[in-house]
Image 1 (tube, rainbow, N blue to C red):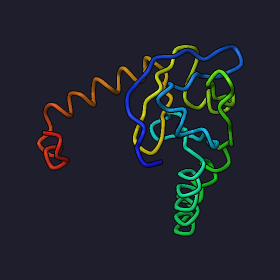
Image 2 (cartoon, rainbow, N blue to C red):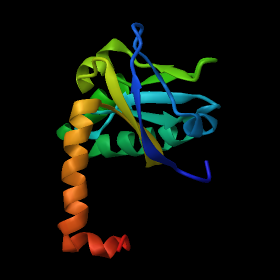
Image 3 (cartoon, rainbow, N blue to C red):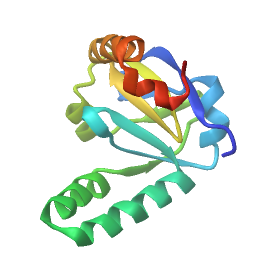
Length: 146
């Protein structure tokens, strides 16, 4: 994928735990994808090729110690391959929905190489903190945002 995922979109989980992927994201997931536990208790959605790279890094890190092995087990053991259906939906397994505290309203966020699925309330809290950090943190000036 030459261009990363970006933007945030509000959607709802259906009764089968499926969420619609924004139209802008679908081409990047057309060859298949993986859903996995994400940082800060969200769900990460990776294109297959990106997931293989991440899994390789996680597997390599698992050789460094117990914490890394435990994290690798949690990440790989809870990851699932998925496909976008004809309506543009991705099925999120119940175990991952529970881990991320997803109920009904979700925010689907493009974060460059991956997509994150957040509980809508949790996302708004984190977004508020992130926007405040962006506005006030001198450390972020090094990122070239300003």
